Image (cartoon, rainbow over all chains, first blue to last red; front, side, top):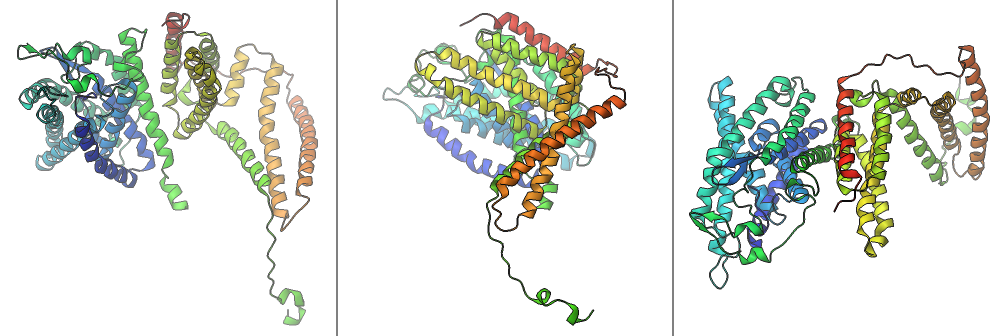
Length: 333
Length: 272
């Protein structure tokens, strides 16, 4: 679901970026107010989860791939605003270091994955939890929330792709950016996410939530005991398993490189041309494009990328936590 | 006591405003001394070493790591090494991470600027290799110093058959930095408290502090050695600790063996 650069017109990117500004602003304020210093590193752990889950590409019949986000998981564990910040930072690291998702399209990607997904998931979870009896309601809420959350995000991405050929054409009537109209992009994105990525998201969310609830309930309920070691253990396990994401060889729908787009076959026809805006578009060279490191086998490169991403995310949030005063320091001043 | 008994000067209102004096150098010395002392004290305050890794392993692997890093000629190994260090770093405490990264980035940026002319002449290899190498080496050593107590490091040195005299000197030096530091700190405080208003002879008192310190250290050295001899110290260090091989040790060794394998595969050759 990471929209690369040049698939969306610069003006679409600007609009999406502008839409995210108030969200980020509100999220930062909420986190400053509500989250105590000691809990901020948890946002880093959340971001690390999201980062890793997005590395597990699931193959989809038809040669494309999709992945989970972990948005609802973070929203349930940390709250929707902190989740928005965690996922934003995870997306930023992916875009800058690994070239997953464009720089210009960063606002759009954040809108889909860091805003729509966690908020939709969270409110559905809350709605169901408050209405269904205690034990079951929680899990039904999580299942419904995570499934609908990721699909809402996919729908937004599909609409962003789909409106491009309607709005931006060159003199010859050929699309400048993403070439597929809504009638192609919405079914393509939605079928893959409704059928497979949504299920993957539900499985990951429920499994990780149940595990955390069992070993470290303090992350969910105030005052219960909080153990961080088992949580690190899942992260390490996910890092070791991350090369499974390489088994899915196809490119995700809407994430083709310049060399691939010409030959993409949709309803029996290949596209046959490279849209103009893509050919001469903005180009950013990430340090380790596609989670690969030059001169290293793919699997090792993937694990190294996962390690680096997780470490950087945890370090970023630990550093952020030092800027914030703890309760004791606040009383002293 | 009647009012008559009180001397007149005590009843007068005083409005003495001391002249402002510059005492930045005293304050600066105090803060720098305090930072060193607090670092050492925090070290001795740790109950166990972070990660619970045996100090002998962390010392030997850190040295080996720095050596491998400096002889490696492939960028892949340097990247792997940096990723490994970042991963180690993320388990440390937030405050330690900030201090370590500040030093490492400072040194790396300095290296980058020094090497910038070579890049302008078209040699990108050295700037791309040396900067991350410097970053990694500084980070590795800092992680060791922040995560391991100094007395466990001296203990670890004994396991590598380093002569006792070196360990003695190292051990006593660290101890003395604390003790003499505390003395000079007290004297600086005294100097600051006693100088009300303008005190022109403040700089000369600094020489006094240094002189006192020297005499004090000589006396203390004699006392310490005498005390150690009385307690049966013959100049030989023995470790009275049972060696336990923990789970963390195993993980640490596996990680480092992987790093060495990685060096063998990617580090030796120049690959493009």
